[in-house]
Length: 110
Length: 119
Image (cartoon, rainbow over all chains, first blue to last red; front, side):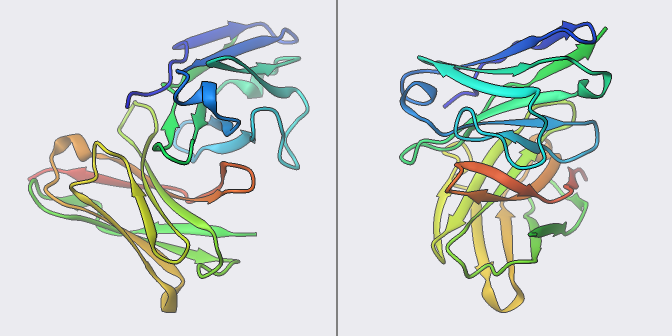
């Protein structure tokens, strides 16, 4: 099973909104509500941003939101800030299949 | 608040066995939680290795299943990873993580442990 597909990079200016896509198949994302998103800074462990497609853990900024349509999940960062510059990964897990991560997206704040 | 800490050799010889341990604090490993291993080769993305749950049931990445064993030591409140017949392609930062099934997400992560496979 191969990784979920994400764009290699997405750029935006401070204050703008950007969206990162995460594309899978009907066997993984399309058939699951178990989609999560992670933020990772260089040399650091990933941090959970979104779970169950669109829910935020306590302490995560409301600027981060998640959604899903068909076989594609999306992470939107609103009001982009310089501190949002990081790598972002999606993940899905469907009980009968192994957990899958996305290929990762580097967010650049211009 | 659960805290995780990986430990183990940072250098493993080719064809050898990679062994890592994850110490769990702030929570009991005997609860019905899912404990996972994830790795990240230098400059590359995350790869799920496998998990142990329900006290001993395991799921592994099909690409690694023939070489991977994940186990739990309840007395030490820790879980472990063994990966046999390693090659340079197994060089990576290895993370232990807690998978919260209620959220279907990895909510706690260790800081990561770099393991290099080299002679």
